[in-house]
Length: 364
Image: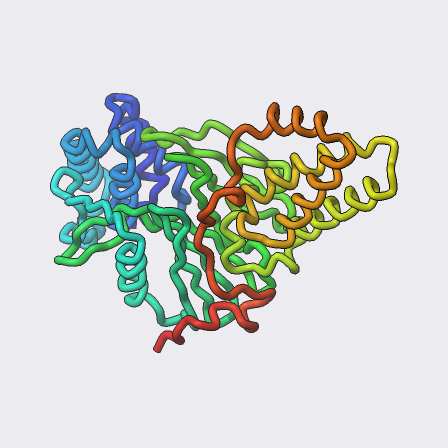
């Protein structure tokens, strides 16, 4: 069978910049796919679905559909053997112009659509659970029988296939081994901003370093490439990952959480001990604590208590100075200051074999 690399080379020779749809398809194959995998219907449908998740292609479906059909037919009849052409499953190919997209506004219904879809592929799954990640997003956490974990992100868009609602995009996945470390055996994809995906692998010699790229917009172009960089230094990737991990990893086992907690506790001790730089220490601790709590641990009561205690102590010692700092640097409300906090899973644990997903039903 033909490979993705062969198809990508064909598009390049065909003039991959001839139109926006061909340019996007070329970039998608280069940025989202491994060149050596078989070029089949699933690859084409994945491109179509990923494209249709963007408003630009929702408004230009005909152009997208025409380019997909034209390039695909030319490639199949000019570059692929007759036997391979017969094996290509044309009947399962999506038509971008005719595919109906449904925006699911109710979070409970979105969870049910995801659960029903995932039930069809559960042979190796021990437990699973869908949790809300904001009003229009959800994540499916699946513990496999070897205690590894898949964390798959979804938006609220679905398409109708064979009379059933199916999540439009299904390729935003993080893979964890049984020790809850990002897997070195998989390629990871995570949404890091609207219409921006981070695609990366974990360094096989150092699990704290990653290599990959950021891919943006309806053209699927790479705009940032990183090689063997510390994950923690890549804020645009690190923080979205940590935000998802709050739903299934106990913060007590999270080094980032422990480091933040220790930092705040140490700042408290220094201020209480009348350190000469108490105001600067406290100001920095409050600023970092609010930022990381807002981004990573929005409903953690212990961190909230530490931050409030720091503010109280500084207020007693440096009232007007602290008020000026707060007004200048913290005009917006953090999520933990709002009356409503994000929903998160009822049960978290340090390992898949503990109490994680305790209320989830085993998959038969």
